[in-house]
Image (cartoon, rainbow, N blue to C red; front, side, top):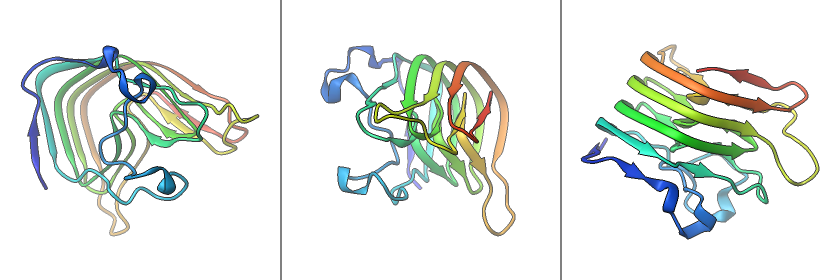
Length: 171
């Protein structure tokens, strides 16, 4: 996969496109794909180099967004040395500040997240089986039995999940 390094702090709070909402890295390519599985997951390395991303916002409750966070889906990816603060991430399912889903042999080290992650919709209800977490909405290994690795992670997050059989976690 590709290697990306953050070279300075980023403030996404002033984002003017898309009603100020971030489109996750490793997510859908267009609106027609929104109801299916993410086919363009992030599989590279993202080194925050100790920098901070602040003001991350995904608030588009007119759509039932899933797999939302800074990244949509991390699949066999590496994310390290990163702080995300003052984040507000709202979606329908698989909602987390770092990623909607972390899967495969992904490695997450030295990451701090702070903010709010919530599963909700404006279309009269909540996902019946929604998953929300501070770091990620869902974390799982691969079908071959390999595991994702999460080390030295801090999550100071308000998580809200109103699904009937929903899952909510701090990490």
